[in-house]
Amino acid sequence: MQIIQGTHAITIIADEKLQNEVVNAVGQENVLKIRTDLVEISVRSPERIVETSGVFAFLANNLADGGINVLESVSVFTDTIFIVNEDDMMQAYSILSKCIESAERLNPED
Image 1 (cartoon, rainbow, N blue to C red):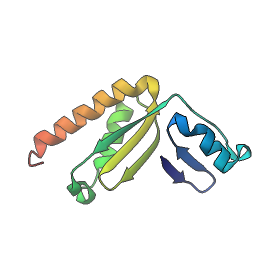
Image 2 (cartoon, one colour; image 1 turned 135 degrees about the horizontal axis):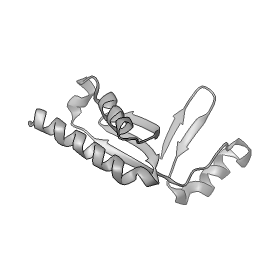
Image 3 (cartoon, one colour; image 1 turned 30 degrees about the horizontal axis):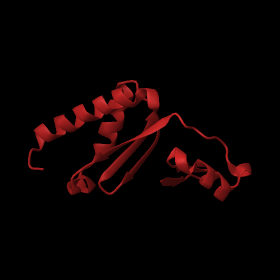
Image 4 (cartoon, rainbow, N blue to C red; image 1 turned 180 degrees about the vertical axis):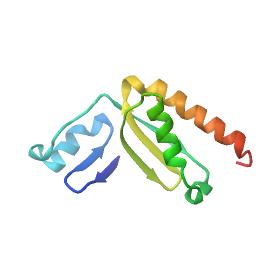
């Protein structure tokens, strides 16, 4: 589960099985929208990513160039997580796989 706090709203990303628990915890009156047609795609990187500029932008730009709408994104230490429409899952996975393959060819030490 991820919780992202903005200036005017909080986004909670959770497995659909937890929907009732989350709604009960925050109160139905505080729920602006529930989406069940989304998937999470996680990219795990080597630790050196924290010292490498532009990685997130590289991944996000490639997704955008491929027509993928990223609804939410989270980057935590070596994990980069993209939330996309379920219908875009395979295309997004393919794009990110190509990005990773390209990066591995440029930096084969990991």
